[in-house]
Amino acid sequence: MKINFVDLHKQYQSIKTQIDDAIKSTLSQTDFILGQGVEEFEQSFAEFCQAKYAVGVASGTDALFLSLKALGIGPGDEVITQANTFVASAYAISMTGATPVLVDINTHTYNLEASTVEKAITKRTKAILPVHLYGQATYMIPLLKLARKYKLQIVEDACQAHGAISSGKKVGSFGIAAAFSFYPGKNLGAYGDAGAITTSNHSLYNKILKLRNYGQKEKYHHLVLGYNSRLDTLQARILSVKLRHLNQWNRLRIQHAKFYNQKLSTLNPFVITPIVHQNVSSVYHLYVLQVKMRNQLLRFLNERGVNALIHYPIPIHLQPAYKGLGYKKGDFPVTEQLCQNIISLPMYPELTTKEIEYTCQTIADFYQK
Ligand SMILES: Cc1ncc(COP(=O)(O)O)c(C=O)c1O
Image 1 (tube, rainbow, N blue to C red):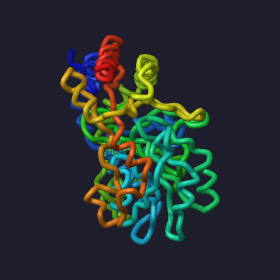
Image 2 (image 1 turned 180 degrees about the horizontal axis):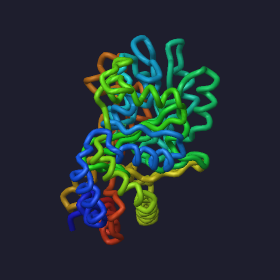
Image 3 (image 1 turned 90 degrees about the horizontal axis):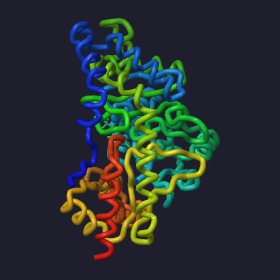
Image 4 (image 1 turned 90 degrees about the vertical axis):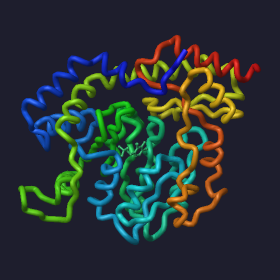
């Protein structure tokens, strides 16, 4: 058996006619830049996220960067985020000229906790950037309280968590702004790079609209220094089609995660299945286990056709690109231990019961060797 980590081909086949129509309509209208399809997608995505506004941009990284930039964050400022995330969460902070301040995460959820964040707050802190990692929403209430206490902004990194819920509300509706990635393999993925910012703050919304389009509101009238970071109309129309299926796709991911959990529960303590905080939901962008003998298991799975991966093998503070921040090995023990133990199993809506059973059986075979 050969099991892909994700299978975008299967997804395309299941919605081919709708996607092909969306592409054809863009080709015949030739409204490639900021066409009507962009605004239509922005409205439906804002509604999906329970936010007032959404702004389509070029990527999730730009969504984070432009949110921070619109908040006036720059050199001399600090933004707190977690040490175990995709590097872009930290890069976006660095791109503004501000300093990423890293903290360790909760052992069970792998997300930020208010008590650890509070210890990292200084006079220079301007914002907190929680990452809803692997698709699990961060428990936001304590972080919102903390932000209020210290007058800090919250920018959510929701790049992996389209549709996840924290205390009854969708991610993307908590921070002053939230960033989403539509990288092809995401729960909602474009056919290229794409991203969006959600916000319910009207003045921030207007700032971001200008920033993503050369600082202009009216063509050739440049009010502020801006960027070229627009969501292509073609991608927006593709995303509008896919957004209609997202709830169902997320339901399938959750169903697959439950089946994995059930099948793998007998392998404890060799295998620890994901733990979801009681006040939140996960949309399982990734299905991540903690396992014993991780590297050997990874090889064993790959040799038997199961494409398992690691998210992420090296934490931000130990990346050569961030040597300058001055962190060292041992600074974030939970994160560092996770990097040694975690493994991500194949996860996408079209995954079959047989494929999950085969993967779980292969893991069982490995520990019974
Ligand atoms: C947590 C996280 N933040 C930021 C990003 C950056 O998104 P993009 O690749 O669309 O720039 C990603 C996705 O790759 C991500 O997973």
